[in-house]
Amino acid sequence: MFVSLSNIIFPLASLGMQAYISKFYPYYHDNLPPKENDMITWSLLASFIGFLLLITGGIVFKDLVVRKFSVNSPEFVTYYYWLFPFGLGFTFYSLLEAFAWQLKKSVLTTYLREGQFRLFTLVLILLSFAGILKSFDAFIKIFAFTYILTALILLVYLVVKGKLYFHFSPSRVSRKFFKKIVTQASLVWSGSLVYNISTYFAQFVIGASPPGTTAAITN
Image (cartoon, rainbow, N blue to C red; front, side, top):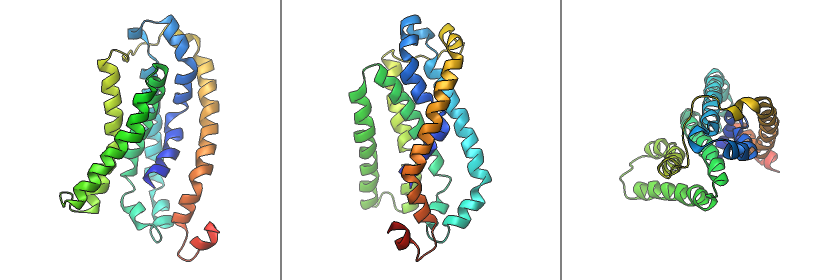
């Protein structure tokens, strides 16, 4: 459920910023020095604002979630709020990953997503077997921050290597292409939202279904 929900949270919170990075990075790269490139600043800021709106909606509709999932998926209700830091980490990592792709760092980002993330999970499992993590509750609460840690690793790497700077004044590229950026991001945001909901919706329907109806849905 953590991974499934994060794949829905990302297109909701990111506001199409991943597509913005992929589409417009060459314009920023060709027309601005690295220290004046404000692309990643606005991408992360826009996604953070989108995530705050998402959290607000999550709080408002929590009672509905409790009613739908409390019987068939009580753990989902218990750790409901812990889904959000996982989704936040997934969102920020995906944006940094898109930026790193433009810098030809796809091998590193693939390792972090496919290898480092699983390594963190494996360490938590081993700590549980060793009795250091003494409860499932502790496991889940630490697991919720694994993608944030993965995103921080990539962020620190890009900053240390001088590949990423935070510039908070709108550049001439941002001002010139603002309308096109909004149009592109909106189009991709709506399309990716529909795609991800259609992909992962069944898991939430099964989780919310009363006992005895799961077999009928899956068939």
